[in-house]
Length: 317
Image (cartoon, rainbow, N blue to C red):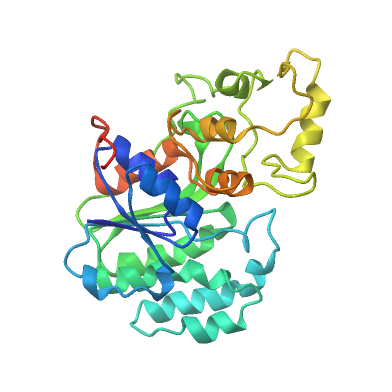
């Protein structure tokens, strides 16, 4: 069994490409509907309150992507203040002491402590392989995880991996951890943009408009400055406007604004065209923008689990 905390959809679609399936723990109802409709086994729950004992001796792999807003550039910045508390909670959990409640209460953002949650599962289940992902500023946290896992006998690789370097049509750097108890693990090597490799995929080649010579900027969950989701931030949109009318830009026929559709965001993330996202418009943008790019998820799972791509699994009935 592969358990998947804070499940979303990106890792699960990557597992599907590799002929594997997970059991995802997800709180958001729209994300759960999206997962279930796509054929992914899903438990609608708060993963932090779910017991680990039913899974002892049954889990091969463990995947987590805790929420990023406290640590992201577009977030509230409170994660930096909360970081020492998060690190302490991880150390405590690695020794079987659960201090999440007390340390979480001292955090400025209650979501910060969620980054410690995977250690509870690792300590109790000791899975064969582990994958973690978050925004780049969380890399020091993954380094702490790595040190603990190495003490337990795991081979571990950590670093920042950019989706554009793995064939996605957007720049999307993410801090990742891949670990295994049964094989040596190395960080996945780039497949695009290097010497002798295919060039980076341009935004316009994926969605039909935008940058013609470079990937899109990072797709986010959006904001509300214009009354709806804005997957490209204000600074990003201003940079886009500066190249409109030049050979570096392909115009968007009949649409004056720079807001991509949910389907265009999904394409830049590498999702299959027939994947349906559920919920209201803002919720659909969040599901896509919160996901790990599929190409990166595939590469990190291969590094940790030692699997290669197979025929895709059919959707579950």
